[in-house]
Amino acid sequence: MAVKSVLKELEIDYTSIDLGVVKLPGDLSDEQYNKLDTALKYYELELIDNKRMILVERVKTLIIEIFRPPHEELQLKLSEYLSKMLDHDYTYMANTFSEMDGQTIERFYISTRIERAKEMLVYEALSVKEIAYRLNYSSESHLCLQFKKITGKTPKGFKKMYEAGDYMWKTCE
Image (cartoon, rainbow, N blue to C red; front, side):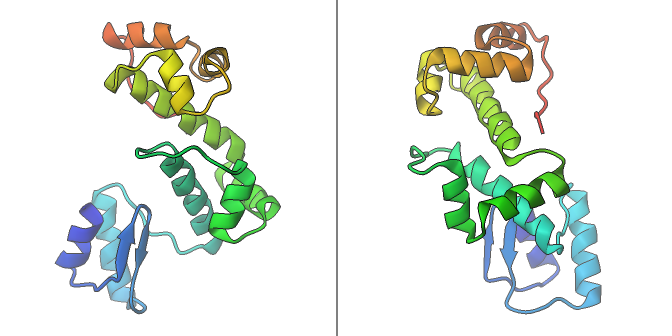
């Protein structure tokens, strides 16, 4: 909603707004670009016009959307899914992602998956078994092992720590 209100306030026409992407009917003048950039920074957002960085952000957006409700089981391997959705060779995307973001696509995918598991534990009060199922883990123990590797805690230990107020939420990115 922040992006929409900024565009409206600056009287900049747009054709669509999706997570991380705004489509404009034409180019912005330098003045419009600078005003938009300044206004978005207020919301801790930024304009990205580097094509390789845009690709990285699109990969991130697709991965994040995989785990957002209503979520369907990923029918393809992640590499095939991303290649199909973004119409790029996976090797090119993986190399670009690593170079531009400093981590692999797989690492980002795992971190995002664990962040979603943390949300489900805390906000949706789901069991570890149910979370493992919903996030398409092969087993509850696989989730627990990956969770501990990323957070340093088991899912149950994390939940206890959160409930005791001993945890400050931060993302794994």
